Length: 77
Image (cartoon, rainbow, N blue to C red):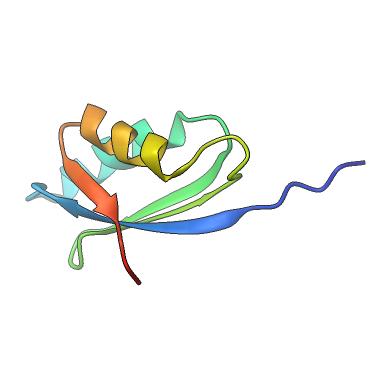
């Protein structure tokens, strides 16, 4: 039995202006392999992703947000 190690990556997103944008970002990020959960905080523009770093990294998460039509970058904190 293998135990998957997960990590939480925080992204800062830009360019979304409505709650429906949140769903669009979450849906796109959730499609990635290794993503366990994704939560977009509309008010703070934070995207919290719990994922398996062996399957998906921050670059892929940023690319998924970009594919949804928004700009994101890993947060410093």
